Image (cartoon, helix red, strand yellow):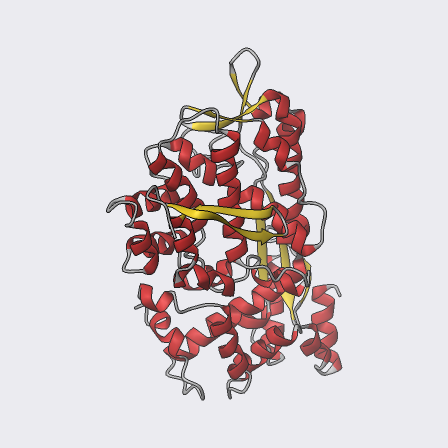
Length: 430
């Protein structure tokens, strides 16, 4: 039942562990949640392989997407209620873009993208404007409404204020994933005072600004993000699982190109391997499909593929040591030779993995990946960039931190004859 203005006859709620409730009053939102493309997000974890390290991290992109929607809804309907700056269509545009911003994520998200050169944002836009249930629901608002939603996600929409609520250095997406990921991993690093931040947000021309009295809450948010990246998102055990996952995906594609005779035909992967992936094929992919193939590939005759799949499914992960690419490349070359002599393929079993994050940056015109700054609204009405006021933020602003690890299968090394084993251990310094 709906009213003539597109509202549900009574408000619907989702019980949420982070925001307590997610409120839905608009029929278009309720209908979008019910689409097959959005329901698919239940079958894609928010944090990829992080559950190998933090066993509670089983939450999905579905509940994160609802959380981002709820934060944007609160900003528009509650925080900015007395400051009307959006018409009803733009209000719905904000809500729909927030809800759908992660629609194009694939299974194990970033690992899958990296191996097969996908861009989840491009797939998100393709689902929104393509022949999909989501597109048909959005067209109930207007024929050009799907295109506008896709433009917000692509950050090309003319009203930058709308874009900034969903994609900036302090946006609903980041606020939800920090709080949600902290909750499900059981860590305290990601917690910050979101209520305070929402109270001090103000809409200003083409961006959301923060009242200067709320600066310390924003400092807390930025430090939370910094800590979450290094303590959770870049955890070396999680990265070990990602390395193995990545190598499985590479190996399967390599075998297919070599006309290897799979015992179980990898139907869901064929269009990927042949670079003919359609949108219809893509939305059939989720983590249950990929995990099914890992299960059956354990029994493949190819020793590398079966071993890597067993490792991933049974959490028999690679060990790691610190690695400095600038000074240890000779060591890497020596190890590759030793691995080959020992019958261990270094392409799959000796891997350098790098993680890098920039916790906050201010706008520098002309630089790659220009970042819109977080701006403070001073009592005088002047706008000042955050790091100019905050010593804490200034200390980490623009400073990219990078970490390198060298991953290897210690159990395989231990099974080698003593002489070969000792030589590899000496070079690895383990």
